[in-house]
Length: 374
Image (cartoon, rainbow, N blue to C red; front, side, top):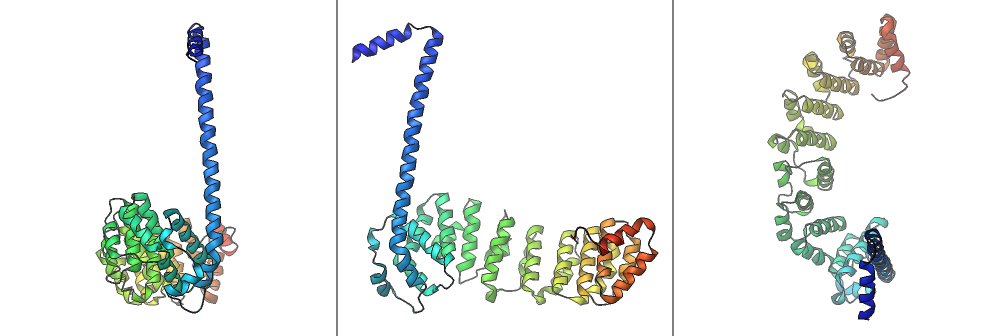
């Protein structure tokens, strides 16, 4: 054996440099291909092995678990054990992950879910304890995954586990934990909304918070209290939109107060909220303040007047059209006039008749729009 090794070695060092380099490169490249092929084969085999294992669990548990979760009568742990027939003590981590996915599949697929039985099944498989352990001892990614899984299952975790995560240094974990806390806390669930929710507040946070507010609508206080405490314009605008969505009429005085503030963006949102809430009493103030407002606020006022349809703003709209130099605003006003009932249509065609030739195209486009974006 050693003889052949020495033979190949001394033969190799006797080759020219380029040939040595070529032989060495081919050896390394061939070795890399063999390793890669072995690794790829192992990954494929492992994938199919896991898939077969998952299919076995689905085949074994999907039907009996579905029967329990969709049953009309309520079960207790002792009742479901003979139906599901699982030795829970022998379940491994990967099996509990698959069982979690089975439960989520049932929740998403079935139209009628018995929530009481669903929680009993979760307790039977010890799913909540499994994910709570991941939140305690797992890495950051696993903590985030555990929060998401329990959220999707609509299962509360222990407060002593969630509370530390609400101040995690990782923003994703921190914000998800705060959403989870607001969903399931029985004492002061909205405390984080008094703190602008999170310093890194973003659009996804709006989706999550809105979901929480919808689910806890029966406990929802006046949203304006969180609006008053905030200095973040994006958060304030979101809260104004939520006041609008939940039609909290008692927040209207604060919206009127915000309109008198310095932030034009918040003024726009307040005007749009008042219009959606059909607070027609604000129309006179809108018309009086209109000349003093920037362009964006003026557009919001015109849209609000179009929605109010009080019948008292036609002369205002005609005058606003006459004095504005902005083409987009002119067309917005013309749309408001045209959609202001029979009197509005009459005024529209009268204005069209009197309009200069260069402005006739505005009227033509409003009455026969090619692109409807106003």
